[in-house]
Length: 127
Image 1 (cartoon, one colour):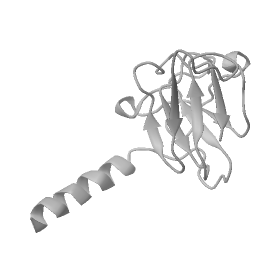
Image 2 (image 1 turned 90 degrees about the horizontal axis):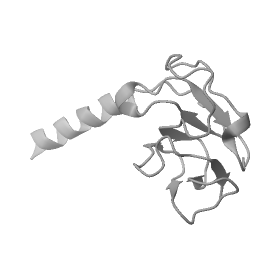
Image 3 (image 1 turned 90 degrees about the vertical axis):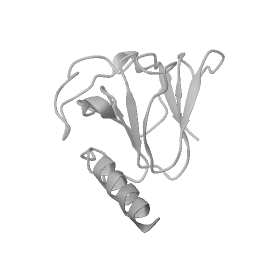
Image 4 (image 1 turned 45 degrees about the horizontal axis):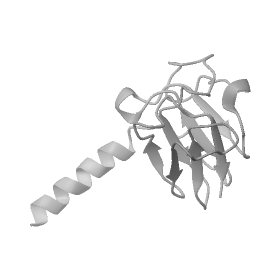
């Protein structure tokens, strides 16, 4: 049993060290990443307030590379890194419309977007 716990702890540490935190130290921000964790996150966009339509925002190079730089954030995000003490919600539609799909990102978590939201994100809001 102790060996299993030790192995689990090592796997968790390896996963956590895979990302360089572009939003590190922020108290009310999230970073949206162009790639998912499996692909090294890539370029990022830092968000500090609600955005009703990501169409006017672009990914920039960051600590995890430049894959995706210059693409609009709208319909191109694959992961979210939350440095916010509450929930952050990613919406499939603009204007925070969850009729088709939305995903809640818990406080202080890094999460790959689910299959309905990956590359289908139009807006995001802090809750």
